Amino acid sequence: MRRYGKHTDEDDIRSRPNRKGNRPRTHIRPKHEDAAEGLVLTVDRGRLTCLVDDRPVVAMKARELGRKAAVVGDRVALVGDLSGRKDTLARIVRIEERTSVLRRTADDDDPYERVVVANADQLAIVTALADPEPRPRLIDRCLVAAFDGGLTPLLVMTKSDLAPPDELLGLYGALDIPYVVTSREELENGDAADRVREHLDGKVTAFVGHSGVGKTTLVNALVPEDRRRTTGHVNAVTGRGRHTTTSALALPLSSDAGGWVVDTPGVRSFGLAHIDPSRVIHAFPDLEPGTAGCPRACSHDEPDCALDAYVAEGHADPARLYSLRRLLSTRERKEGD
Image (cartoon, rainbow, N blue to C red; front, side):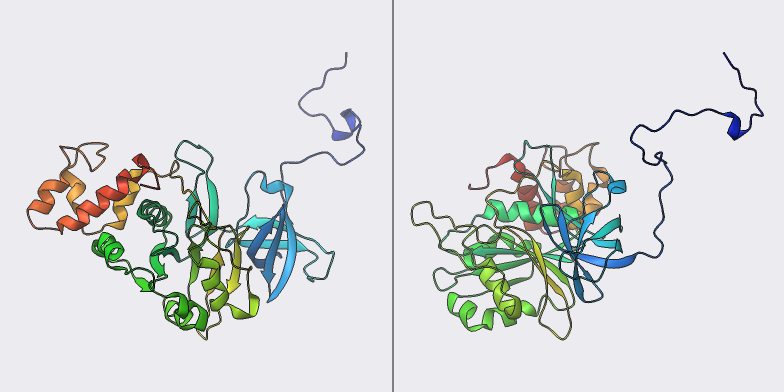
């Protein structure tokens, strides 16, 4: 058997032939410094449509990215055929760092989190005041996900001609969430879109809501030149809507100030298994200083919580503490409650 010393020549080393006939694998990955910048507009069965220099380009994820997936709103780097012509395919080689992430799970026991949209500035939570009835627990869950992911919430209430918004607004008044109230007539004549657009200019806004609340109708009004889907109806038996949007899609906002609207599929549940409750307090800057005296790993809803004394001393509004605890306990309640 031949033995080799420390100073052998490379030509003196025998190597096994590669049975597949391809090049040996290497851990050195290309940097792709000349890659083009793009924005992911939608994802469909492994194919991602990206906006590159104002033209749509279909791409797929490079193998070197491993299990890391790009989602709508991601800023990515692409190489390959960037012409955007039919039957061409580019390659996504890098996903840039995200500024915000909206996540959800199927339910509170599901360990697998799904990223809904990346890099959005705000989350527009669309709910009907009637037909179907509003679901405050679902709204609470969306708020928790928005606060945790770094998105500013916006509450959009539709069908005010069927029910007044006062009761629902009373639940969220202490949170100081911006809101818009619209009617069915305003959705049809475009007035609702004009008032909602005032909150969207220059921002990336993800729209979420359960089926039948008028979310896609509103998105169609905001982006009339690129109507998303035909709208659905509410089931008279179940009181729930029919899904009309099947995949998330980013659309450029019709506005001089620019901005993007991300329409997402209607949700019937919004799991929070991935949420760390300790991060929700960051969305309450008026209450956060009062947690300094809390015991370790305080849930902020227990007898020894320092927030009770902090509020009693007049440092914050009791309604704000109630709202915080309602949001923190939302994982313990069913969304239809």
